[in-house]
Image (cartoon, rainbow, N blue to C red; front, side, top):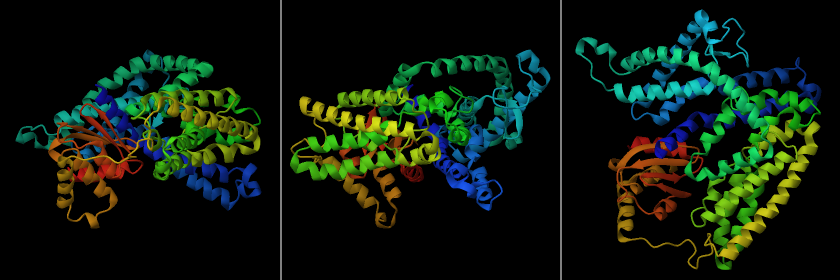
Length: 526
């Protein structure tokens, strides 16, 4: 079950990976269209304003069509066959589901407590999805339909029908069954979704008023779940679902950024729910401290080697918000240290919340500048100066705690071993690696993604040992038939991996942000 949940979490990242880039560009367009920052140049009648308004309209695509993105992209990471066709099937079935739901409410809406004649605006319970006026089920409805389509596709896509019904083979059969099932699903949603919406309203109120304790628990779980790959299942309903606000906190923040930039009210008053988007403070303030502690506690002869590891890892965290390369340098050799790290991260986030900080601070400094600091600085600079002061204080705390704990308990973090990172290989390891090199006669002409995919496939026992493969933001997640032919972690590290996580027959090779390209090459090899 845990493996299935991990696979689902990884599949969720297929559409989510589009949001970061689009969000940054949208934030920049908001800056360029804000007269408080750009002056007369940003007046609505100028060519400058019109140009950036055109750019903005295009980059709103992903946020204005979250449901369609999830229903198209989620099956790609979950289905076992014909990934291109299942996207088409999922789109058609989800569209029919919305048509069925809208038509049911048109005639029987009052029986379900829904007034179909109300305008489809946030809070009305209705929404325009793909041009269809239907029940506002958000990404939850899209995910449920996508999961239904994956089940039908995997069970019936290859089903042989009689020759005289050959037109119903493959995708036609899947869509036919799916559309029949979506009628039933539409009725179920009309019955239960209004009650769910009421429940979500109470949930929103609870979380918004949970104060610092709720923020601390949320932030702690986010860090503790990271090694398992399940942290996305915690954060995504807040970011892109209706847990706090309709359509998710990410869209809400971008929609209100101009309004907030013009207001002199505190951010805590303007957007109280954005406290659940502060958990990225560790990326900028904690990462350099942890890197410095790992460097200072390493043996003097190993420090040059450790600097080559931790400095790029810290920069990846600060600039791009990717913390896994740094965290996995100490996670597996000192799990207790990671628990301490998670507690400190949660405390840092809570401290920011208590001093009144709010905003979209889940990634690195680039996102902070585009989505928070630059557009909001004129009227909210005092809050950001307080953030920087508190962050630097915690930078010192992280360094002192890490340095003391590593020294006190003699944790064998990188660089503290006498032989550094050098590891011995067995004859089997050598032969496997030699075979991989011999088979890959054209390696010199292949790109790095192809070479890394080939190396991972060989290290995991070859194509015949692969049961399934997917990826999240930084990891290649593979389920294998047998653990015996899987090579030691050191092999993958030599091939450029940042770490390896073992969960029985589920193996996660930490590649980094280039994992989607490596996964594509991996699929080709299979």
